[in-house]
Image (cartoon, rainbow, N blue to C red):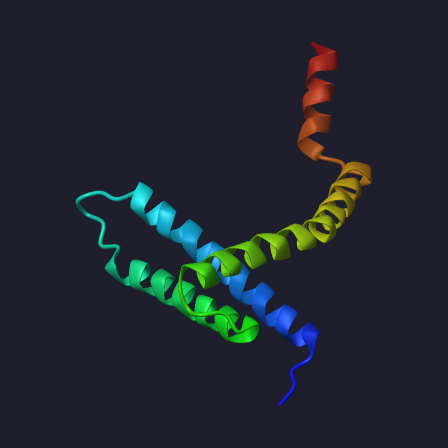
Amino acid sequence: MAVSPELVFAITAFAGAAALTSLCVLLALLGTINPYHRPAVPLLGAFTVIALATYATAAAHDVEFGLDALRLTMAEGVLAIIMILPLAFMILTVMLLRASFRKRPEDPLLALLESESGSA
């Protein structure tokens, strides 16, 4: 059964982004460890996501499951996030422009403050 290249790209991009996010979660958990912290379940979950994403990428690209597949998964995740950044920046720019050009409603407390300071 032949799989379209677009589907393979979507699977590997999603798997790579999930693995990269789980790696960031692992680093955050390890960086914030303290005596009252029980990170066993989140660590296990993050390792599971990384392993499944690596397996999916290895299966999609016919690569042996191992360090090469993990490296390919992380690289696909970085590339997928970089490809999404222009869209995210456009959305952020539109939101900031809307917030900048929006006319603020009149605040009765500011008007009261200005009237009191003008009469004194």
